[in-house]
Image (tube, rainbow, N blue to C red; front, side, top):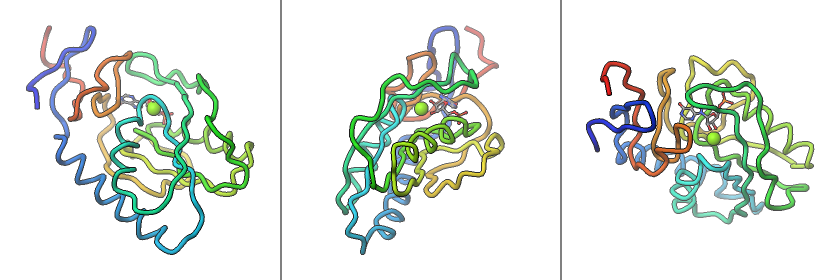
Length: 185
Ligand code: IMP
Ligand code: MG
């Protein structure tokens, strides 16, 4: 893990090492495997691009029931804060009519994205929608939509790494870093 990373005009310091992230994904996958052990439905695993690419890949490897992988691309962040408006950059890659959908998100912050997405999925006739997120900022989340699978909770600060970005950069790190306002450039 690097001591500090610099992306655009900001410095970030270590928060969660990669092996800890992987352990939390083991636990979420085990819970999901237990929940789907005896079902013969094939749920749609919906990767929310771009942030969830790494999480979806790591989660999928650990699942021992059949899933139908689909993607959608949403965005709401500019820089280090939410714009409040959720934009669909790319629509669903498949038909979800009558299907159970498990949303795979990188992070739930205010919950606006997840709320908008759940609405979209029911409008597209999903039979059931569940939410799985790698990270949750519990201090920020005020929505009522149930979060079925949460791998880790973090403080209300801006983070990057393991799929998450700051204006496009930082997604490739295997560890998670948090904004460091003390270190000057
Ligand atoms: P929400 O709509 O406020 O819940 O924000 C969710 C989306 O904002 C996530 O899918 C991320 O793309 C982005 N986001 C929220 N917090 C962070 C962060 O700390 N770092 C990077 N992206 C974030
Ligand atoms: Mg995202």
